[in-house]
Length: 284
Image 1 (tube, rainbow, N blue to C red):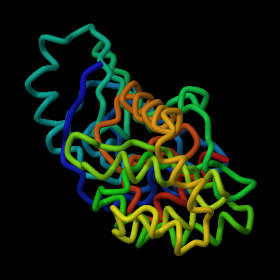
Image 2 (cartoon, helix red, strand yellow):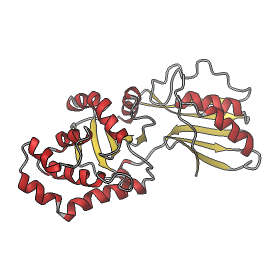
Image 3 (cartoon, helix red, strand yellow):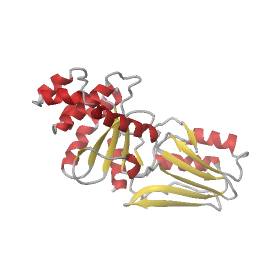
Image 4 (cartoon, rainbow, N blue to C red):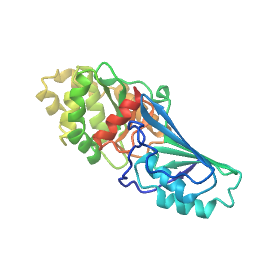
């Protein structure tokens, strides 16, 4: 499978993956003799298929419209350089890890653009979950990562009330980038120990506020049992649980944090609340 690291820029689609499917084909003029089909799930756009002549400009337009992001220009350039020697072949392209473009370079050409999907069973056990009903938003995160802290500061406060009302579930998954964040692993272990006393999410919020290092002090501020907390910090099985989730993230091919999945679908931009909600609607 080939990967195209195209820059993610905001698009101007009438509809895109996760949005209501109505209106997607408005303003699209397929080449003569071609066909464009839409796939939907829960009334939302899931994927788009094309059958017809190889037309790099139209394919670029279709990809931009489907993803809502500006992949088209570099894709058009890639097709121009590679279509000739790939004639007759099937190619799968990762578009910034969130979308999959399948191409069959025959005559007529066939293409399908959809979200990257991972079987939910492959995403492992959800242990720290906020909410009891609804689709699951799994967030692979690192307590020392400034982008994770931004997500916790800007997006999660708008999702947590919805989770408590039963509209979704939020699952925190450990992915400490310990090679560049020396406090990531100790913070994750401390969060596990707070979770053992029923305070994972309050402790999560303190850590995401940048309060790293004084883990006993944070436990004290939540009135946790300090003796049990201190013992837990040194227990090898606690570190093993964190390392197991980190190993899972690496097996899944995750490259950074935060990485979010709405059900089986990789969310392109977890900082975009509207897109997160669209993908959760798709995942119901």
